[in-house]
Length: 197
Image 1 (tube, rainbow, N blue to C red):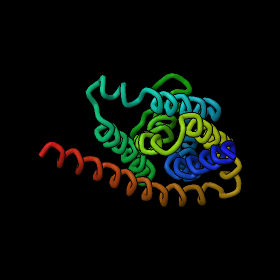
Image 2 (tube, rainbow, N blue to C red; image 1 turned 30 degrees about the horizontal axis):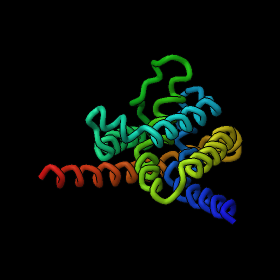
Image 3 (spheres, one colour; image 1 turned 60 degrees about the horizontal axis):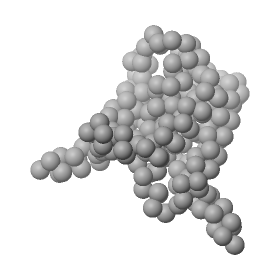
Image 4 (cartoon, one colour; image 1 turned 45 degrees about the vertical axis):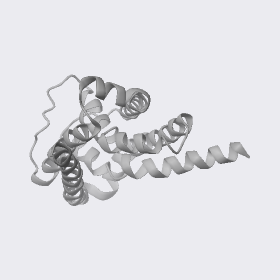
């Protein structure tokens, strides 16, 4: 009976974290990066995202406190990066230059802050009181499987929708991402300002 409860907890944790990490909703961003000629290594993105999330789950709050940074400030900083990514998509400009070593885009901005970002960090902190650490780990692993499949499917989606379809989706989701980043930034800045006052 307790095993069934753990399975239900894994499912519940998965359902909480899935829309925040949002592999499917991030597909237009992936397509936008591929359109710029960037090489996306699906397995590497999923693996690095998983490692970052695990490290944060078990040591994130300690690392941030050691650096003198709270989760709200960290979330606000991540929101700025998401904001710039949205501007790229909406305005057809390049802010994140592909000047790093090959495969660097698998780490920034994909693994962090897109998939393993402030929203996911805050959610992990919030659900640790409800679920056991291993239940969260399994939920995160399952989400990374979905992420890997999504990344692998982007080329197929591009073939189905064509360049015009991808262009329209990129613009629409650019606005959505812009709204999410503004909301995330405003919420955390408002908290920090009220805390200071």
